[in-house]
Length: 359
Ligand code: PMP
Image (cartoon, rainbow, N blue to C red; front, side):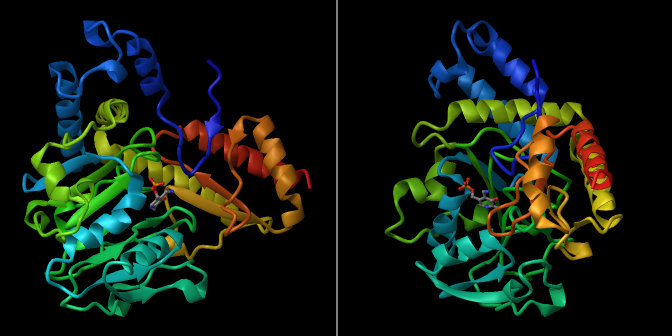
């Protein structure tokens, strides 16, 4: 099997061990005589897969008992509407931190359902910084505060968890979940599309504090109501069973590797290696402020953008794929989630140095 290093922002690499296990189990899961794709979601086999996946995620993230874990569909993008529909209650509006393309999308959708107050807005600086806690103009009467701890496109990551007092904090962790330990109790709700650090696309995980359930607006579609999914153990309808199963394999792999403390050590080392080569030369540059640099998505530019195509071509020849930056930022972006082996980063660093010295 010739596995390449895929630096895609998502869908992204999955651990090879997980792919191989899924391959081995595909035709006959655990003596059941069928693939997980073919099982009833209510049968005892799938129930055991589902329960174990949730328990492993709870263990990995130390999720307190008063939080529910939901395995949903519709991607992180559906949450952009579900959050105001479910969490507004009798409040007039919510606070949003505008720090990049994904928070911008969340804001645009929320505006369809409630008054949005921007408690921070870094758009003027081109979304290259994170706002300080002191600069946040939080409204104590907001229904919730929404932010994007890691902006996948800009490569901007918060180096702190905003303090929001009694107002629940809601975080789009799509591109940072499971990359390091976090204190779940600081959040009212965490959500993440799976296709970066969890599993295949099609699954979205929501971790929500129980007291926030049951306040959905009357016209909320049933499928958009968190309380309905919580009451039905994420089986109100047919859940994305295969994605749930693969996510469970990824959680098992993470536990085997030593959990999130161990992942944080490797992830920091991987990111440091890349930023070191970017900062150590005039040939490459990072657009992101030092304290806001993401461990997961590393955008960088070449001093001469005319060389971009050649850089990408040489990278692909070495099995280093999908390094082209997002069209809104340009340049390159290396997404280095949990499943990107450190050897992949080492290979990229070696190629970057080689490419620079060949100019
Ligand atoms: N939020 C963030 C931070 C993302 O990176 C993405 C996907 N790249 C989304 C939301 C949207 O996720 P989905 O495509 O699963 O709706």
